[in-house]
Length: 306
Image 1: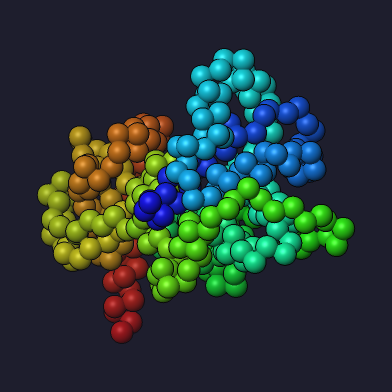
Image 2: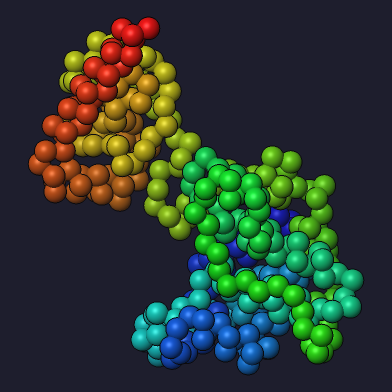
């Protein structure tokens, strides 16, 4: 088995199906649901531990097969819709499993490897489509706090009660967790078994965004009298792109030239959002040009002072 590919399959499955893994419940809020699952759903948490940490291919897992059935069950889907405010997200689901693993693996010499492997799930799910690299697992690392990254906290409670009973899990082979938790298999730049590019691909399966590292080159655009252009690369930002006369444009942040954006770098839905935004604001183009003129004048002032 390719354990790295298997990890990616499991992460995608959890991100796509976390709401189907738990029977919809009519509770007051998510915290009550969390406590209810933690207290009275040991079998489910045990099955989730197997799904996330075992050596078996996820397609052979009982929960995997159950989710396929639930997604085609109209009664279940209706119940899920009625309780849509109490849907467990992937981060919280992982938090539940992590707490269960800590509680139920006292005395199991593999517990630290299990926790480290679960941290890799957290690390992948924390990824955001920006320039920052996430190193945090379940617990937030100082480096991520320093970068002012908005990270979903989830419900995480560490520690084990003394009265908890020892009860080993149904995982009998440890090749998967041995591989995933082995730091020799991790990249030094992000302390993760996946590269940032691999995490980005997973993220973009669920978020219709321009990859943060997508670049355009500042070139001449006759439409906006761009005699002065820097010919430098810059990163595309969806919020700064506008639509005009069948083309998409963005102002170069280096020289303030208006540049044509390669439309192939934009998904159809992003194009629609940009056009809709422009249509809702009849002064959008005018404001962009005013901003450009202002920035150019400010730059001239700075150069004159030098």
